[in-house]
Image (cartoon, rainbow, N blue to C red; front, side, top):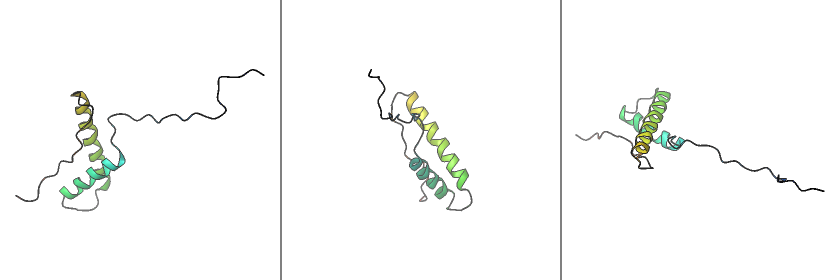
Length: 82
């Protein structure tokens, strides 16, 4: 019987992840910082999440344009002490 090149077990393909896409943990952390900047007022969870994702994607895009390879992911938090 002739052998085939195909393996009997399926091959796992790595999921394609865009380099500038932040993880859910990074988005959650940034959204929390946005929430805290607003004084912790509830009711804007979706807006905070979308804004956090937008900020992180923009930061990651700028870092790759600069050739740094790794984006700065520190949240922008305004100090309450003035």
